[in-house]
Image (cartoon, rainbow, N blue to C red; front, side, top):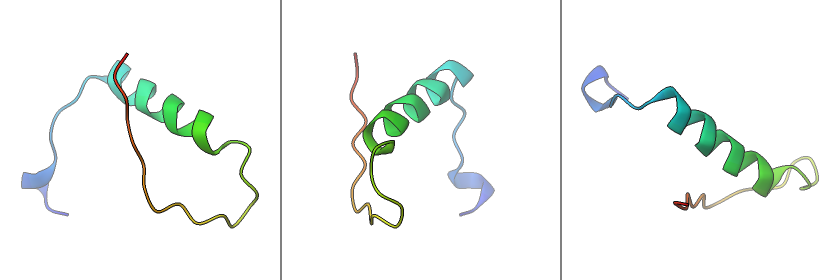
Length: 42
């Protein structure tokens, strides 16, 4: 990844995305492979 590929996003958006990912994976057993992450709006 290069600096040119990095885009600015609001901190709140980053926290929201992290929360969505956490809710989706929090109950998975350790070592579970994840092959797709989908971020929904709203």
